[in-house]
Image (cartoon, rainbow, N blue to C red; front, side):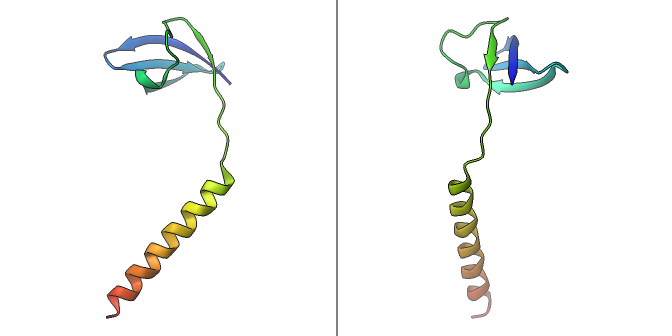
Length: 72
């Protein structure tokens, strides 16, 4: 996916994603060093399946603990 840096507003960048130019506000510190208005960015999103499983286990464990504490 591609996004263009449309403009900067204080500490944020306004990016336009894809052909539909979906507007997204992103903290400027997340951009590559030297990024400027008009630059085209290549953007990828990937699911981290292991981290997702780990997080679900962690949350399930916390919920179990809360349920046990309620019944005391």
